Image (cartoon, rainbow, N blue to C red):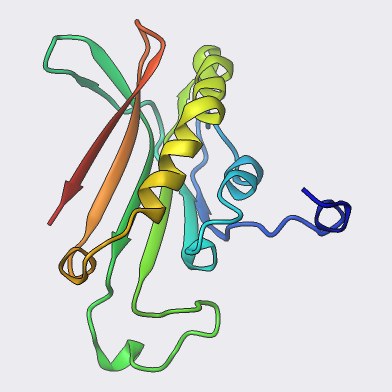
Length: 162
């Protein structure tokens, strides 16, 4: 990073909402770390961020282990309506929406999960966002979900689309 670039203020991903959560929970990563980690992806100006949920979101994996949802990123195209035919000055391309959602985790797990996200999770987000995509892919919605396998201290990634 050049000295000039390091003197620039950090451009932040706009946070649309942040749920109030119990003191027993914490969000595993913040807006600043996500903004810093994704600063040079081409879609940066299209990203929005939400911190949502009241408690951990858990699910059982196929092998019977427990996974905690941490982050999801969704790509979608908004439906064309009379309300959104004019360009939104906040967005570079109103035909694409990229939404990040962060879920809370138990406060005691936060540090360990944050390290996993900083070490591997943000890189996976970056790679998924910058993969070459076909026009057919761009015509539908897609979500990448990052979860934590707490027992094995590793991240789990899954993609869905419609």
